[in-house]
Length: 496
Length: 141
Image (tube, each protein chain N blue to C red):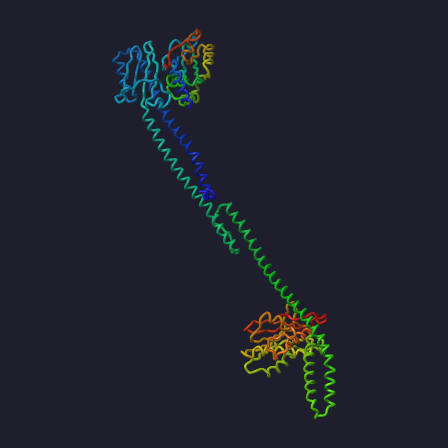
């Protein structure tokens, strides 16, 4: 009941019923009073008029009435049906009553219908007959008037009940007409709140207020939809920006770590190189001075070979740390430098590996060194071969011109394999010196660090994308020969 | 409502002390006697003369009980119909309706001032007065 009272329909219905229950009783009583008054007034006018007529006739009759004639006159009044009771009182009292009204007695004048609750309207009229005053008293049947009033009361009941029923039904129809468009709007609003922002709000109602409400809600929905699109776009941009920032932070940390490692390794390698130079010179000199048959000659040659291998390692460390002589820089076509090295690599690849080359048709001029680039390609292809040696697969080498992460045009090189791939943790450390996942003795852990060092010395960047079990792709980006970045200090590094 | 009140007043009056309604004129009025039809004509606005002088009716409408007895016994109509008839007579025939008085004192004053005036009063309001005369009994309470 409380819920019904809190709805629009419930309140309208309660209001309509309350108004009716307040207004209908006085309306009923008022109508009944009007009918009763009307019926009573007609009745009273008739009986008074009749009494006057009889009185006038009796006064104007000059002949003296004896007792029998008086009785006849009164009997005529009663038998005519106009009155139930007739009495004429002078010196003698003469009374006549209708057959069904025996026992009636005049109890004074009535001045309104149903006075005395005896269903008889009494009136009296003094007459001047033959110089004497006589009183004519008449009683008239009120039942016809009372019956008419009762019938009127019943009819009014029916009419008001029908009116209440019709008005209640009208109120219900009005409520449905009012609430239907509101319910439609509510459903549409719920769908909008559920995420269906592109669903327009509309109504079939012709009510001005409802149409205005719909227009306002539609305007609000449109604004909401626009704001939502903007919000989604801003969130996406913010997420993308956050990812880019996170990636750049990782790149920066990796670059700093590699730079520190390069500085440390370069310093150590330089010192080792200083130590190795006299070892190599003195062992060479000792070997030259010893006779061919000297039993220690073979030992010295072994020591010299070991020192040579140590020097090679030192050179690689210096290459990673850019402390070595990088050689000449010249304007070269990346496609040519890569293609020449891949041609050599192809000959070294086992039969189960397919080598695919795609260099495009546009020249990719960069400032670099063909020998160093060749070493980069060689190292990357060697790693790819190692990754695919168990399962085989395809080695794809591509070059193309395209925008880098900053949007500037770059000369791009990618080396993709279908090998075992690597985890994100491994990928984050592959450019560190001496880091390797190969068994002891199979790798030095200097291949990719050397690649990184060479690329950094050429103002380039290298990134790796790898999925365990699927393969890896190394992407190298160099500034084009005309790129102004070549004139600025090197700040490139590795990306994973 | 007014009629109901009058009825109650009349019944109360009747139970305590019965009052007769009488037709009254000034003591020197030319009216000697008047039958009920002439009385009704007079109070309906018709022209009634006595001694070649036109009579003038006064209705005491301020006394509800008296007016109820007057309507029932003299004019024989309800108040509404009586007033409609007077209005119709005035509009259609140009006849003057009876004067209206709010109190018995006013009726007495008019009767004393005008020898052609005829009014209705309770009998006890006239008893003992030498300047007024009762013409006939109109209603016995």
